[in-house]
Length: 276
Image 1 (cartoon, rainbow, N blue to C red):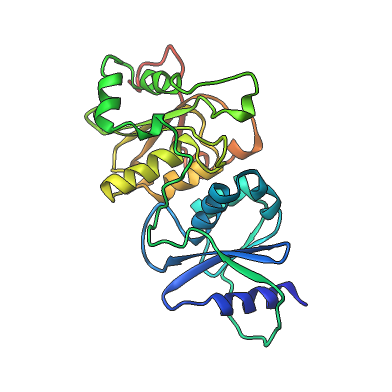
Image 2: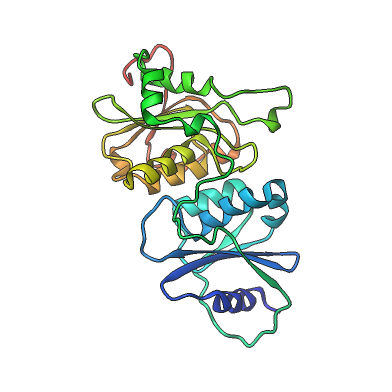
């Protein structure tokens, strides 16, 4: 059976008017997630599928996500970045078509609720703080990037590093220096929950708005392709956003991101106080 025809037929079986669908087949199970077309959020059918799989299956998700993801919509930088970092490969713009194929598969909905941005079961204690609490905690920090470093220091670590969240944090500041949002890494179980993703999705749930123009995002580590894609996707005007990070990540997933290509990223050094 030709993979393209099979994907088109599965898309036909999963078709719902006005909805995009993303799906992946593994070991006879088709895992899928729907998302309304034309609705803007720091999410999509692809993002819901990936985040939902990690939330439900944790480490077993890696076996599922070795397979190709199919998507009826057009992949954004956000979708592409998340697939690059936590999955393998994706084909988008799949057109549903009835090819009369008999399939021996089971269908399983992932994140089937109405929420556009699903709140993870693995949200950490640090991310459950209110914005008022974080503002109070960070109010003594004069240099904004130091605020992100102080927030990252709250993340507990242990000897087996992969069993713990990474000590990475992000702080979003408006033009006048007011903290607008924050996020702390919580990816020990759900690999999509980097600090920047937590910040943006929490910002959306609380404000239902995009990162405003002329804001600055301070991050302790350089944003990866997943985080860069979501930052770009969920900014009012990416060209009027500054992203300042401290530690340079050496891995392939942090090279040649959309933020790099647009020259939005800036690395902070201790001697450079122009960002603060």
